[in-house]
Length: 228
Image (cartoon, rainbow, N blue to C red):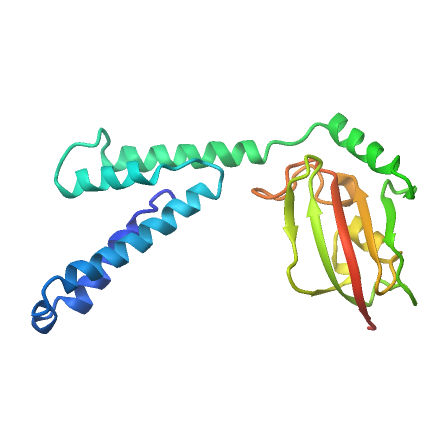
């Protein structure tokens, strides 16, 4: 999200003007204003939702009150540049906190807890493998593709990714921990794999989604193996 977020709103207003400012449109009292309000309202809603999705609370009523001040030429306490800069600071600070690397000690404790669960197996690589429901048949190889459902979470229980419908991956194209775990699964089974950052996304993580040094836990249902 760029810092000049609300330029999109001005562009949306221009579209409303260009499509409805003809003489025939103005014959319909209030149509232009209603159309502009619809376009601007939707654009503003999207901007609010983008910021709120980062975990920043937004009081919509206060936003609307301030918009009305701007429309009526009243002071809001900010110039446009100052307002845009403040939004950028909020967004950047939240992203920086989200991307802050996790401590190695906390992640080691998370892995130890997973390995201590009944039925869990700690492998030499550091991966913890647990059968929830065993499947049947052969296990996939590196070159195979697999159709599966999964949910991935962090050590604090936060789900960072999950599937609503089956997805297909080539086994060898995934992070090492996921690849290793898949090759121990059978079709129709559900499994839990937990692995350290070294088998996942490392010290960097995925900005905005997975912190650096994060150990990851996946619950995976293997639906089908698709041979090479």
